[in-house]
Image (cartoon, rainbow, N blue to C red; front, top):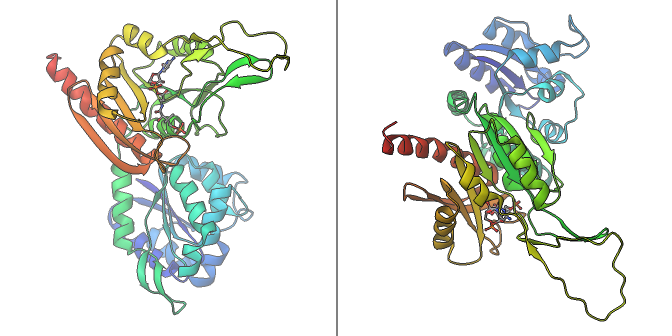
Length: 399
Ligand code: PMT
């Protein structure tokens, strides 16, 4: 593999030399990039000697003004070790003021980050929030070890052992682009159903689950079409975003883009009712009480179930009780291949949270429980199950 080893400025920079040696020993091509601070601890010559390549250090002292772009495009994995609190913050914010941070922004492959810093810096809410941002971006964080630190304190913050980082790189590099060549259609977020030009009915969906699914599918090589209700999230890189507002618009866009999709994931929280004739003008506060007569919205999942053909159809079920029974009922009544059931109403999972805890009810009769984890991790586990489910269904149909 072609790996970029980004070295940050910490006392642990010397351990990155051992990591470079391990990666070279495994026959990877390693391109070292050092920040200015890293060079205060270890000289570039060390990495040049270990990797057999000139070390990249300076955005402005290079042959080509766009070298960071070409280096980003030519490599498959970016490992940053040690990642300092400063480097982590810059990556989280997208600041690009040197070769390594500029390269990071231009890089579209797998990112592995091995932090190292003083225990208080590690535990600071700013650092933890920045790490969470990077995790949600799908980057692999190799947790630092706990022990005696160079600053004289004891606690978490010591760079993971180079062998542990190499193992994490090995595992990430082995993750297949197992959805290459497929098109995955994901719906996400809430819908907004207008009551008049200024008011609407909606729900608590933030879009986080659907966006995590879109990001996971794209990372695994799929073309991803993300049909999203109104949310405050940036679309994941490489994903084709189709913004919609209402359930009717979502239905229209789903069927417009269904053609090439081999997998459809309906994570959106679609409103079940709407006002079918929306007044042209703002409703005036003339009466003490008004009644709304709402009509059902189109049931997109049920229609997909009728028209899905060979596609894998995954529905979601947000329930406050009887999760397994409700998920199974939806699976059968809407002809889904899998229903992801999440108990909503509980704290720290379901709507709005970065975390979720779900059960996967499968057409094969199997039910898999996924313990609470980041929605991004849950998304990967759902796609892992799609592969297993496909194999089981093909075997059952003798195909
Ligand atoms: O967005 P987050 O804040 O991350 O929260 C995630 C989530 C809780 C919204 C998500 O994980 C989830 O559970 N989404 C489905 C919520 C929902 O609308 O559940 P439901 O039981 O009402 O609908 C069942 C299924 O039918 C869903 O796949 C839904 O997309 C679909 N549906 C519902 C109504 C409708 N008119 N058309 C549909 O296609």
